[in-house]
Image (cartoon, rainbow over all chains, first blue to last red; front, side, top):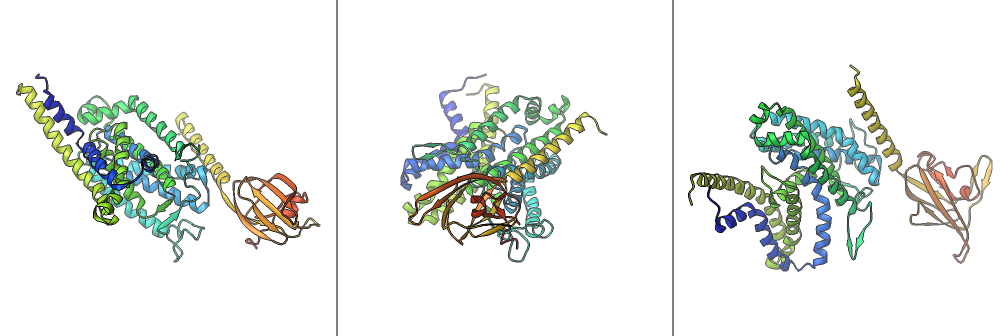
Length: 366
Length: 130
């Protein structure tokens, strides 16, 4: 086989890391325009990294199993929100409230993950679009439950949570009792910066879990399935069962991720929080350089930092450039949705380029 | 069929339920009234102090004059309290610290005179439950 030239190596690096490079350049332009101080940006990044990393990490396992980006993670997010609604009603506060919410939400997310995995097994090769649509379907059931069953079938005693008609949950729930329950469980202040150490330790444990899990028999099975389902099946790996387990793990972790996310925010948007969680987590992972078929832990952290850096600086940069912060807000929405489209298109383009390169190198062409 | 694996599963489920109950009991936030009025418990009358400062679980203290009633939030079943009795110029003349247990929403009012007088429990009937 022919060795690659320097030009080809640079070209390959640029293609492989096109999305993070684009975002890095955009950030480099937007940061000075925004006028924010370095201390402010570092504090924001510390908070946002803690807020989002767990959610984004929950996407890794299905990618390892070859199931692409799990748009069905919103199912787990919905389960987490149901846990938080119940715990808010019972007035259980602090870290105990968060743990209780996670405990309640776990069986719900396991059930939803099983359903999602079973459906995706019937849609092999089209997992992403199927899980995306499944998210809409379960969102309908969630809304029906929260709008009609809560307060009617499921008793809700706290009148602050219930709509004035007597049933259904209000659009916004104040999680003041649980706010930063995990973040500042272990208080740490470095200079003027508050470090959410509790959440970082949880994220570190989760990263260790992923590293360990990849080395287990189940993790190896998932990798084998991700590479070739047919070969894995022929080798005696229970393909469908393993795929379901991958989705269940991802859904449960997304559920915990959503609880961590909302305890950081301190307010829950009952009918929208989960939608945003799925879309933004996927966008962040893709911005970090992950693809539909390959994602690593560094991709998660790079992605969250770059994505949220744009989130913070773009409104102010928009205001400085155009005189209107709203332009920046539009830009944020455009960025979050647009980057998914760009990443998927780049992924397809990269795969085509890789195939061409492989063909050329096999032929021994320059 | 009840085999070893199912037995472990049942035990695990039971442990999770118990954990849930523990989290609920220990993390439940209660609205507690704090009262500095004369109160009669088991035939004995406890008179209020002219001015007291009461802090629960190391939180922000409440100042109550004789006949005052305030409200605060406490979390869990066991609580610590620090009561300072103040004179007219606001100086602390007596400090009493102790612990008490949350009984129920019905008995959701902490009586400062009962606590200072050494009543069996400072928790008395809450006006919200009446």
